[in-house]
Length: 207
Image (cartoon, helix red, strand yellow):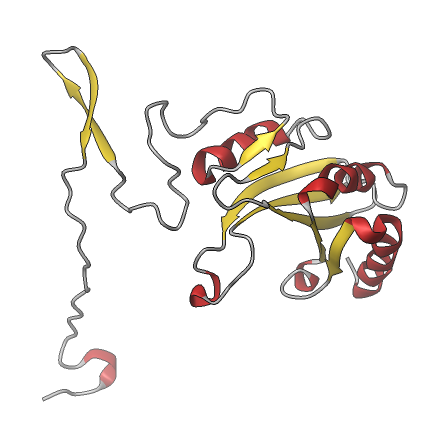
C-alpha cells in the first residue's frame, strides 16, 4: 500500500469511526508495512469491527490473526496503562489493504473483551489461543477452552509473571496407570554463558 493510499484510508477511518476509535495512527512500524493501527475501548470493539468489515472503503473480510499482549514490563516497568491487550490483524483482499485493531481489557485482574467470532468465524481458535496463553476471556465465544495446554495446566504461560519452569510437571505413574501431576522439581537458576575464543579469533593475536 502506498503512503498516499494509507493516509486516505486513515482519513476515511477517522470519519467513519468517529469517537468510537481512541486513535487511528500510522506511527511505529505500521506505516513501513502498509498498515494502520486502530485502538478502541472494549465497549466499541464489536461496532468498530463490524464497520471495518462492512464499510465500502474498508471491506476487511478476513481476520488473519488475533493475539494477546502483556504490557506488564513494557518500557522497563515505566508503562502505566492497562496490562492486557488483544491485537487483531485484518486483511481486505478486495481492496488490497490491511489494518491492525487493538483493544485493551479494562480489568487487569480479570481481562475480558468481546469475542469477534460472530463477525469473523476464524476468530474461534485464535481467541482460544489468547485465552489459553494469556488468560484473556472473550465474552460471547461459544467454546472458550484451552487449545495448546492440557486441561490440568495451571496458569497462562505467556504472562510475563509466569515462571519459566511452570508450576507443576507431569509424569506417567506406572502403579496408578495414569498421568499424574507433581510440584516442579527443577530449581530456577540464572545461567551466564561462558565465552571461549581462540587466541587468534578475528585475526587478532591475544597473548
